Image (tube, rainbow, N blue to C red; front, side, top):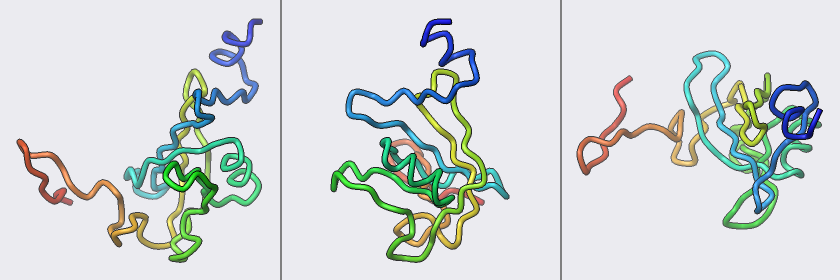
Length: 123
């Protein structure tokens, strides 16, 4: 089986990092299914997440590994990692230990587009 076919139809974990060495990671609350945040993972972040059970990401602005909650204490405990069909994106099903967004909001997705303006998401 070719690598492409194996990646898309097989059962080997073969993450497909982009030309910058990154995968998209969507974080979903395991309890509520709410989308909490979107971030990027490189090989180091993926390995640290798998090893520790806590979500780690690659900071594109700082160019370094970071663990979500390392300064705030609001870590994301990873319950499952779902892999998309061509293995270039992940969903991390997590149990958050506090707000996910750096603003203090539960989710980074607390606003919605209304015409040309943003308004709070109705919950």
